[in-house]
Length: 101
Image: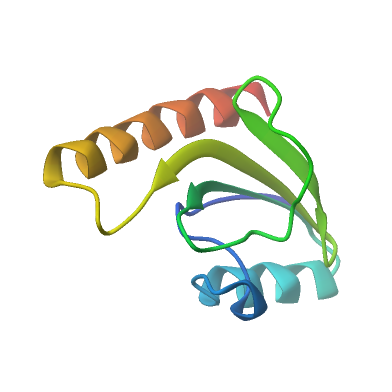
């Protein structure tokens, strides 16, 4: 099965981000599924990808998971308006990615 997992905070515990999406995706890969994870860029966090952003995203493999990181910087120190706008942009770009899969 192909699984598209969209989570703004995705990453692994070793990268200082939300770890539940990482462990779920890794388990799905272990069970034989193809997993693509869409996530955002979080200030102070790291998705495990280190290549440059091209057209607002970078893509690579992390522990068998196809990771698409959107270049949408986010921090809890941002104001309410900026955080809301970032989440709306993330949602919109995720919908566009889902439609292209």
